[in-house]
Length: 107
Length: 117
Image (cartoon, rainbow over all chains, first blue to last red; front, side, top):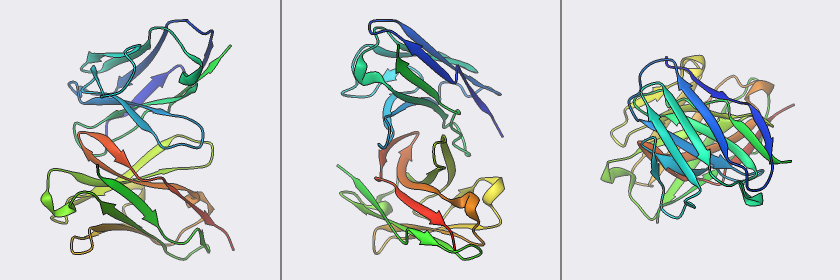
């Protein structure tokens, strides 16, 4: 099965900072990758699908890029409401594996 | 807008069977086009996708649970279900049901299931 590896596992940044989270697949998954945001005690929310397509209603400070095995989620200007754990997920074929998550907080 | 809602016991004894149902509203499971998933999250840990079912009954389970897990669908009730046998404390988690075609676009609220005597 394809493994999904995210880095870093956690990060702390200041409001207004630019953040990048990386997700690496152990095999080529084309652009069949999604990013989710999960705030504490809440249901995960879809941010990006097809590696770079912003889900409707998601702020434009979020962006995604990559294809094949290497993907990134970028927050262009971190806001207090972005404190959350972010997960990538592959969906090219089952199993629909998640990355281990990246916890983002404010410095 | 489709809505999903998990239901089932919040406490299960070790060695017994964990049974959950996901009721779908605002859309029909049998209309096709979507897979119906179960995902769990151990306390303080990440998301673990454990399996899905299509309305035709086709399923996929992750290898580590394949011997204990059954996902079924009841299109007449617009529900799908999870059964996990021989549970241990390691199965204590929040269990989410969800819908996907590609990415997951709809989630249930999640239900905490604790395995304890």
